[in-house]
Amino acid sequence: MENKIVWCNGTFDIIHPGHIELFKVGKSLGDKLIVATDTDEKIRKDKGKGKPVNNLCDRITILQAIKYIDEVLYFNDRKELEGLIKLYSPDILLLGDDWQGGDVVGIEYAKEARFLPRLNYSTSHIITKIRGSV
Image (tube, rainbow, N blue to C red; front, side):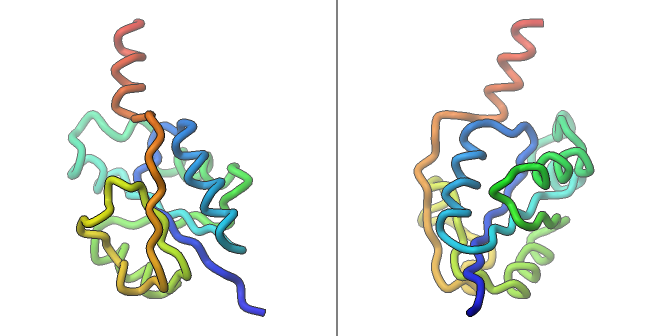
């Protein structure tokens, strides 16, 4: 019997309940949940020099400790991410619903894409809140 693979990717810089819900749902949809995270260089390029807060090694360590996640990978650019998704050809590509109708990398290599409603959490809001209380 073949394992049903679920894939999700993102920055996952400061883990919050929205991320945990994504991972929990992802694991419930299949046998193996693979999570891929951006490299520090890609995050800086996409989100500015103030990010990431946690470096790649720390983010991988945190993700590997989450019980819902079976494998953690990382990628440096869109082409690399697409190659990884093609290689693993997941049964389900799981994303936040803000990506619905958007330019989803690797969607053609998954059997289906599912969009999870986002919970009201944001790493940027968490950072702002921390800076405001210092």
